[in-house]
Image 1 (cartoon, rainbow, N blue to C red):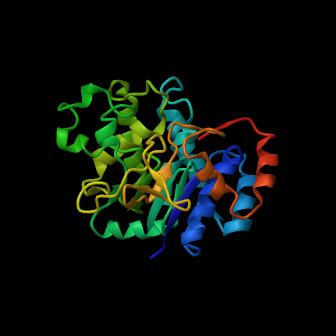
Image 2 (cartoon, rainbow, N blue to C red):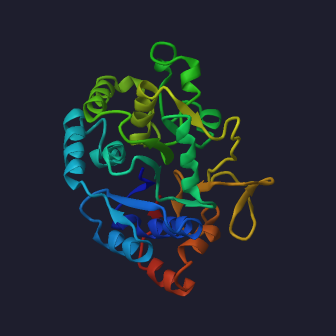
Length: 291
């Protein structure tokens, strides 16, 4: 059985991708990691991550093009502006039997691939407090309550930046059928804050994945992970929520730049394998990058 991690990136997010991979390899030097190109501008980020951390390119580029094309046909541009945002859905048809998907605006504080052990009890897991802190915001509109999903199901909504599943739980045809359903019911979703794939992915999971798990709920009781939470304690570049070590930190919705929450922690992981001065010379040539 092949287990590993998928990321989606292009050259625009190379600094974030380096920080993420530096943190992953610090705790897990051998886990398989595959890069799914967001678009055709990925040669720099791929060559860098391959050289530094043996990241492999997603081998079925034809699948990515097919999926992107089908998504573009299914959704109007004023509904889903960037079909490429849905390329992460290719993970269910890739080379890994069990996998984590991780956004590049994350750093991890443990051997994160160990979370895949939870797939012995579920078909999908996440690890965040969106359901309690944000409710349905940035996912669904109130119209879905009772008419589409019951309250128990809506307690499983999640942020789409960190989650795990296994190959073959759904087929490509099933995926496209769900996406067509979404395209016909824009009123189900909350896109008011500029999110893109997250509402669609939540709909897919609640509709098609019966065995779901959120690691912040019992019995795991994992801590929070959002960089907008100000109370985390930095102990030698590992964050703690009171006495509980975080699994990862996610800068969801936060522009990464000097002064951003936990900036110095991010900078530490970005510069693990090069002097900080070299990083700052690079950064001075960049505009602030959105993560």
